[in-house]
Image (tube, helix red, strand yellow):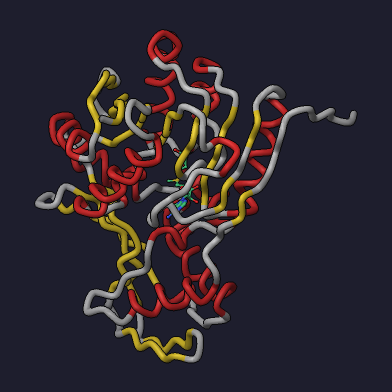
Length: 321
Ligand SMILES: C[S@@+](CC[C@H](N)C(=O)[O-])C[C@H]1O[C@@H](n2cnc3c(N)ncnc32)[C@H](O)[C@@H]1O
């Protein structure tokens, strides 16, 4: 059966070029504590692996956040008036369906670095919401973001679920929040999900699942780099590690070399010693008060906060000042 499409669909392709990727990877691997920016987990395979993580019994964040959103959807309808929803790190665009159904905007702008996955998810939104204009935007949200031109004059709600804010260092999160406030403009809306501090054992098992999906996701960053930059990481020579750093209140994810490695990346040689760790991700956990203060400091007034009955996860609604 053919689909009749009446409303606009346009891809805004601002995917970072390969020289940017290669220079960011080489810069990170040249530091004392070698690191790889977490955005490079996400090519098409990485996006699929993340979706598999969300189904794991140990991985409580997705189902907890979806539960909060479902229970509060009537509140969203009563509170929020916005003509356009811009979603940062939209992935499979699943959670936003609850918001689209409650707020009923005219346009949806999913923003994601993983282009193939972004376009597929945006197409399925277009099919399920035939009156919605959809403008998938492939971009790196860690850089200053410009709205696609067709929605630039509309009232906005920015949506940033999944506790992806936790991947930023606290000072980077401040810069990101200030950018969001600029994008939505004074009076613009912002809904964000944040993972809360809790028993470290719960956190540990969420990032060290028994079926090894998180380990495969972590190693996918090396496969992605090999494919994009023609490098030669040996995926079997690294072990997944995820630990909770109680002082900094964050899960730290590493790939630990099991033997000495010499890797060639974009004409450069990188040496990695046995037991040396490549830092691939931080996932900061907040208390409700810490997170409220953070969002307020970014230029917003808090409208409402919602948690689940175990207080595992927070959804916060705010308006830019
Ligand atoms: C942890 S997943 C969350 C997906 C979805 N929002 C959810 O809550 O289930 C992070 C998503 O953000 C995207 N992403 C990560 N870093 C990004 C960046 N710097 N710029 C744009 N998208 C990014 C990934 O491709 C992925 O789809």
